[in-house]
Image (cartoon, rainbow, N blue to C red; front, side, top):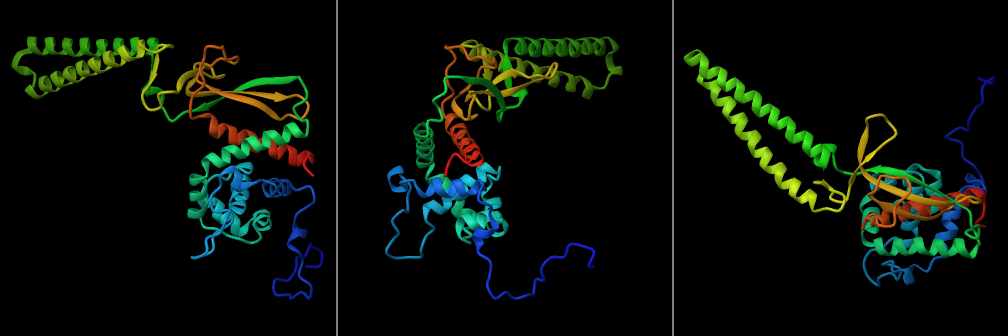
Amino acid sequence: MTRFVVGDDRSQSTLFPERLDDYLGEDNPVRAIDVFVDELDLAGLGFGGVEPEATGRPAYHPATLLKIYVYGYLNRVQSSRRLERECQRNIELVWLTGRLMPDFKTIADFRKDNGDAIRKVCREFVVLCRRLELFSEASVAIDGSKFKAVNTRDRNFTQAKMQRRLAQIDESIARYLSQLDSADRQGEAVPEAKITRLNEKIATLRQEIQRLNGLNTLMMQTEDKQISLTDPDARSMATSGRGSGMVGYNVQSAVDTKHHLIVTHEVTNNGHRSTPPHVRKVPGRDSCIAARAWLFNLLLLSRKRLIE
């Protein structure tokens, strides 16, 4: 065994235990999260529970829960249950929280109850970037990314798709009517159950035509002549794959060319790379993208050691 790298004996006692701070390098990005959150005025931003209650069980400080939330987004751990497990085994989170291990319900409730305050933290980070003169460069690069919506392609209709669907139904009805004519010529040789089944199929298809005509009326009233049934704001967009497409959103981002920080972004439902002025923003979608944007910027700053 002497020819292998040998670890410490788990049962070995130490006279002077190692400090928790020794487990993280000086350039670890988690230190930037700690400094940034500690400098925030959480009460002024609207976080609840900053002042502890006089009675009852002690609560977790909002700064601790905000650090967990930020760390989770930076490391693609968004589930509250996974964050609970990471607090118990991840040395970075153990360092960040001071060995505190809140349960998943506490983490989820903090995220649910402090949505507006978290958005204000995004603005505070933009102010910090301006104070550090990180947005002073006039040169930016603009690009877009498509995000899939919770809306299948079958529940999205355009003019062309509606015409194809109605044509398919007309062909099916014509085929079933032809089969009924053939059954009439054959007389009693055709089972009655088959004729009944064909009539039921024709009735179902005619009901579908009525439904599609109603949707077509609603679709023609929209600006872009398109309608999505599950997520009304989502739109059909072409992707790089040949003959492929998706129903979703187009996030346009402007990134400065020096520090690669996200300067601004816009969530649209237009599939083109450059967003025309008349395309409206999608309400309710910017908050999530804004959180991701400033957290991405925070990660870049910490790795470049621009926050000391």
